Image (tube, rainbow, N blue to C red; front, top):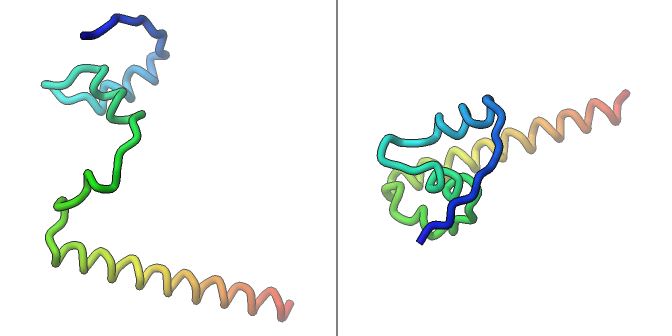
Length: 80
């Protein structure tokens, strides 16, 4: 059962909310989706094993590159 509440939104806020709304969805559904806490378990099965492996590798490679960049920056600052 729904209880109706009125809220004020700026035009910009309304437009942003409306941009997330699907045709078959209510604004309440959009607000719950955007503001609600979701479990990581909801993501289970979204990616195939191959896609998950590729994503894992990409994240690891990015972490390695970022660590190297930070180390280079630290070295330059030590030399300055």
